[in-house]
Length: 404
Image 1 (cartoon, rainbow, N blue to C red):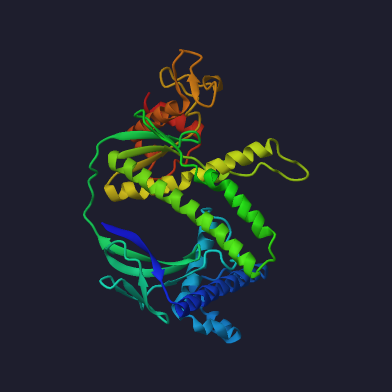
Image 2: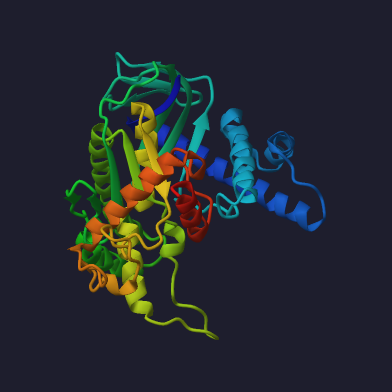
């Protein structure tokens, strides 16, 4: 089987190379905004959507109008049109929001599909119009490099090398199945009785971050002191993101290595973390409490947790089953009674019908595992690593019919 894998390293460019990379990223951002603006104008005029090849035909005119675009390698600008076409496709298929205009300093990057060279022995990489650049060689690059993306984050530049290689069909080393219930008080509760404490890294840095943000707001925008204050804020955000990513990678790696099948709830994190502020005409209720809950949900990184589990299980030869999340913490695993009164507090579960008691998160994990077993028995209800499409009530009815 083919395995696509990215290897990311920190670059160590000189001053001239940094200035060139900033120009390249700025030109890529300019082409994105120009193409997005023209697509919207064409749509308003009743014209059809232009694909990547059609948008590439606009580049010569833009280069003639904005001469600084010629400073960038042509292939980096051509990659933008493909990215925009993919963004539109994701929007049309309801996998993402509508493409937005890009701002300076946000997701500055550019990609080379060819023309690069990698010298792992001497820890350097050659990029068109940039020359040889040294990088922090922390691990061996496996496979054939297909493309290279250069990006800026937290005042540093990084290179991500996407590779492709053939590997044998994996056979998972474990033979166990586990259900996982994610939460706030406990990051993840496993059906085998163990649980993982949350990192809550944003909460740990929240006060200092707010203090630095207030200091930045008092500075004159784009002044030297404002840029220094902004760099301090960016440093904290980078530290939070790195700590969360490290925690999630270690957690998902441990779970994946020890379980052949992982059952998780099919949570819609975007909907769960929506603001409750409402509008001026219909203001929301309990806005402050919901805002705090949203921060806690986003601080856990549930979506990234699931994403990492899915691809790591594929690499190891395992599976991830996403089951309906409805009433997992309100259903008694002993008698099957479903009631909101079963969950007396955030942590305590006590069935009002049979008297069964346990931790509420543990009950949720047991029920997730049970639904995973049912979905395995009725394989038409779910596909490995993908969400169940039926409504919860429909799934419950079909599972009952399957086991009747």
